[in-house]
Length: 231
Ligand code: URA
Ligand code: SF4
Image 1 (cartoon, rainbow, N blue to C red):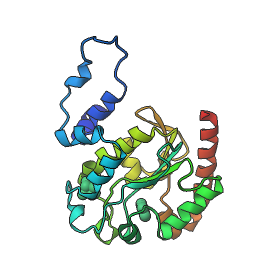
Image 2: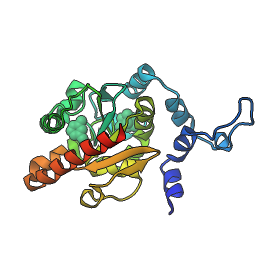
Image 3: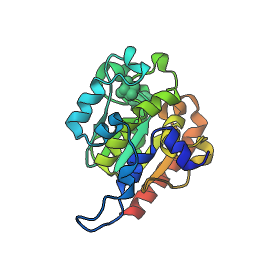
């Protein structure tokens, strides 16, 4: 499958094609992209503001994860953030409290942010690939990340961050739409629909694999350098 086919399979194509419609004069015929069919749910989510998005996620039943969650976790932070960090999905504490990265992995994420002078909520937004906790913290299934994707897509579109950082494999794969190994995908700036994107390890992985913390530190320096070059 080529990239367009993969995007189509995942139901991802149309939103991003619509994002930058070709410049046209007022009153000109609608762009060809408007003719691409988008399913009604995706189209509705793509038009939501923050309040609607929060409500829609709270009541969402689009995948099986809704059956075991206590609450959906949309995300937290500055809606005008320069930095968007995307994790995998809520764990037990996040499911309990309704905020991403508040458990052990969250403590490490906060430390990683502090290392490059960032703070949760200050020019930083934190979200997850899936908004509901996978039972026993298992990895979300591709069907679940696909079902949840329109919410993350809308968050990206509303925030329009300068840089997206994915934490761990599921988030990287959701955004890059390909099989990814972190060791190979880190250290370069990827492109997601015009947004620069950097891949790094998930903090929960780093807690179990201390040697890779040095690489995560390199990644943090790389992110800071990349952001500096974007200003
Ligand atoms: N791990 C994640 O990927 N996200 C969270 O919100 C918490 C732990
Ligand atoms: Fe809906 Fe996403 Fe929760 Fe699935 S994980 S029920 S798609 S909000």
